[in-house]
Image 1: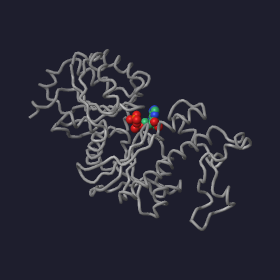
Image 2 (image 1 turned 90 degrees about the horizontal axis):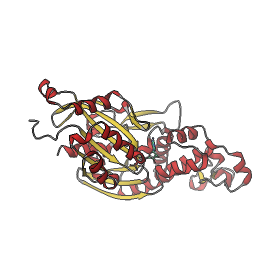
Image 3 (image 1 turned 60 degrees about the vertical axis):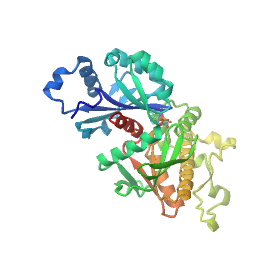
Image 4 (image 1 turned 180 degrees about the vertical axis):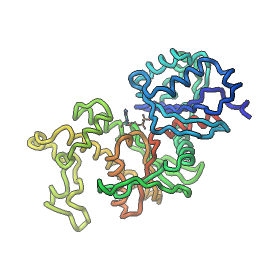
Length: 362
Ligand code: ADP
């Protein structure tokens, strides 16, 4: 039954504005006959990918996300998740070439803007045909596949504002529709999903993960996302933002606004004394809060408009970023008076790439 399947290696690739995401299927049910026939290059690529977790100086395998014993088209295997910065594409192609990819003349399914931008380079450098798929279709296909194959994929934060009590709780998604997807990558796309093949892109904003990282680098001199998040974790945004209590002296009770609500993001920073009093951590924290809260408000407006209560946030902006997840959880719940729920996914930014891998099998 395997004759009609595409030849190995099986990859799905999402070439985004900031990060390239790769999903690699490692077969674990290879028969001795098949093993004997397998070309050396293919064996080497498998060994290289599965025995390392760093590739070159910028490629990473997220081994904590690895999924064992999955079935794809009747084959049993392991899904591996790999990422590298898209600006390193030249080095990636170089590496792929040195591993003999060109001799396999393989087809790879790709999505994201880079599938168009780099198409010729893939053909020229590694003799690879890119089959291009729409990124939003791939995202939703990938989401449903992973959600069905991983029982703890989808979760929400209980008690998001209490460091001691807060915890992740699995969310039952057996009745998924309708739901909203807020994909926070370099920019943000918001989709309303009504059924298996029924969705629309309802909104978006250019103030996304790329904006957070870019502004943070400018304001704090940091140079990586991880560093930006670490700075933010140690900062206090109330030294940067102007709060309702800074203006009212307390709550604005008539409209239910607590004194702790941000009235003006970065609103203290026009005063010299205030500027002298803030440190890099405060600036990183305020940048993170500003971008996150803005995305939260747009998401909530879209949800109200579409009459949808469950909002799934995804994209690599949420990687190692509990601060934003908890802020979104609180904000969605608070500003909707408990009507809406913010949901999150373990595989954060990989759904487009997974959706692409599945396309290869169709
Ligand atoms: P895209 O497809 O636009 O590249 P992603 O979903 O991959 O979008 O998210 C990119 C965003 O993720 C960045 O703008 C940044 O905020 C965040 N991010 C998380 N980890 C990293 C990282 N290692 N390098 C760069 N950005 C990262």
